[in-house]
Length: 348
Image 1 (cartoon, rainbow, N blue to C red):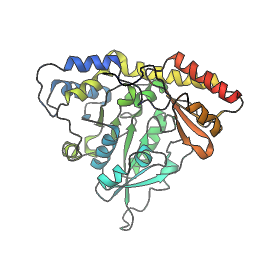
Image 2 (image 1 turned 90 degrees about the horizontal axis):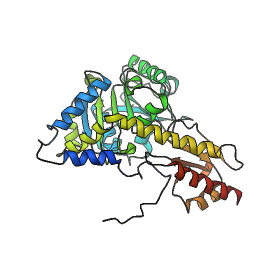
Image 3 (image 1 turned 135 degrees about the vertical axis):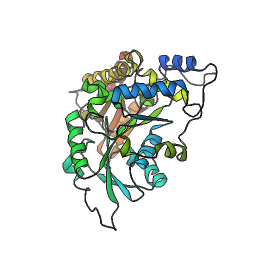
Image 4 (image 1 turned 60 degrees about the horizontal axis):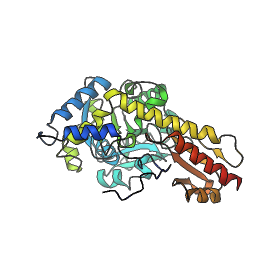
């Protein structure tokens, strides 16, 4: 049964894309016979081995259903009830998770405004205070996003500076890696270079935005930083009974370089999109295009007319800022058709 137009193309979100054919094949291959439920299957065991090889021998993996679940479960394990998380004002845990970290975990978010979606030690210092003050939620975790919600990317040195600062204050560091593959493709480095090697304690390891049907994982890089995850995952309703189907998806990203291939392509399409429009009258760009997102500035009327032909989102309507996202299945023809439409609307 098909209820949609398979030729419909958008630049709204990489979540709009379908499932990568190689992932569907992997799911189908795993869909035979019986496997032990709740994570005692061969695919989950293999995923644990692969992630230890990628991030280090102490790595623990806890597959979950979605990114919000990964963030909430991971952060909950990293602190007591009186703990607080320092994050940017644009962080997904603050703007797009319906208060789940605060309502489900009971933790407090301490947000800092940033121009580019990235934290620095100096920015963290604005909220890293008040330890021992019973009237203040205790800052215990720093959470950063890679690549950020504004499409920017932390270098390994920038992550290392944050973890050094946080650890020096007795805090731990969480990374929301919903688009971690796009960051790795942008940097041209292994995943470990800006995670485990750079001192990150707990990682929300993304896959859905890079061609998976729906699978993420909490990846604990330093086990002492997040005790109790085996219980919290279940308590948080993120324990899959047929976990092999989550694990095989995540595994497939490491097969034949699929994760990097897909991310490199999405990034390249975003670069093509921006390159085709840069320098035109009536359009500007608010952020560097470092991953698979393009943040543009144009008149709201132009954006509204354009949206009648291609779906995308306003990011900050008051500023005329829109976001255009590319995915693993975005083609050069898609980009060229979109940029032609932008040129038409600007000229009109």
